[in-house]
Image (cartoon, rainbow, N blue to C red):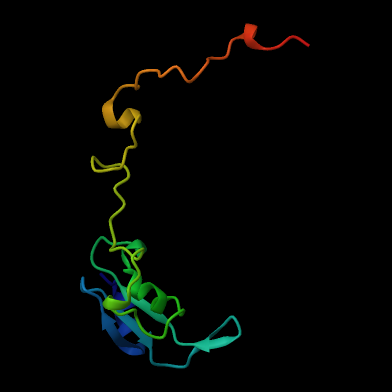
Length: 126
């Protein structure tokens, strides 16, 4: 959701380039191209949905937004590793906890015998 300054900039200097499946709008500047890295290129930006962060940009639009592609990737051309966006669940009840994590079960897993604890006596004498 854009604030007033972003809304005004978008109205005056942007043209809608497209929308993704979730409704985010992608814009490109209509004015003079910006110089960056020795090349002139138009400014590109996205208007996020309320409460989103930059990780919400789907892979088909990421390349266009960062000037590595001239157009977003078609859905049929997506690679298997280009997965749909998933929100970061860290710090929530849905967070990933690997096997053996205290957060997963609330208790340590039983010892398997593959670890020998350090003691002062186990250090070889010089």
